[in-house]
Amino acid sequence: MRFKLIELRESQPEIVFVWNKWAPIKVNFLAWSLWLGRLPSKDNLIFRNVNLQSTSCDICGLDEESPEHVFGSCIITSQVWEAISQWCRISCFFFFSVTDLPILYQSLRGDMGWKLAVQLVFFMTFWGLWRNRNNAVFNSKRTSAKHLFEEIRYPSFLWIKNRSRNLTLSWGDWCDFNISCMF
Image 1: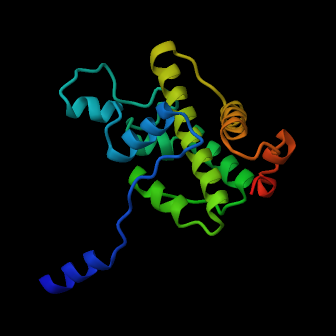
Image 2: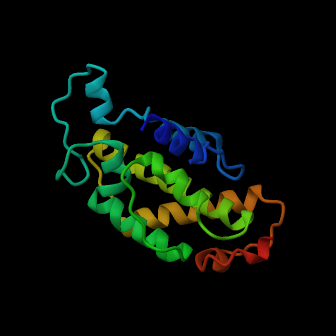
């Protein structure tokens, strides 16, 4: 039995975190921290013995705040991911852990440029969702999924437009996720 467990573990490809060259360092760092499970979500703060008045999600109030909830199962988050998957023309997806997300976008079919653009969108989504969470926690402000989606799409366009070598990408192409003109 032990031999089979070792054999299975060795047959699994090692997933490494890859930083995105089009995303700002702070966004890459956030995505990396999320992947490592180091974000100061309420469940992580409790684990670190920080006293909190409430552990519920400040966005929906329906569940305990954890990275999986903030970035996956919160009702607003689910609507944002649905809009992202439709925009990028990828199948709707579900993940059990935030550590599954690099596996998700690395396993998508497409050329490396397309995958890099999808990774940028994922990273910007992490950034937007975390900012939305922080606005709810610290400023009692909540944002609709539609508004949050636009807050993800526009800055990611600016990042890719200003950081890629080929500057022929238009806002219309980005809104249609037609990025073939870049490669």
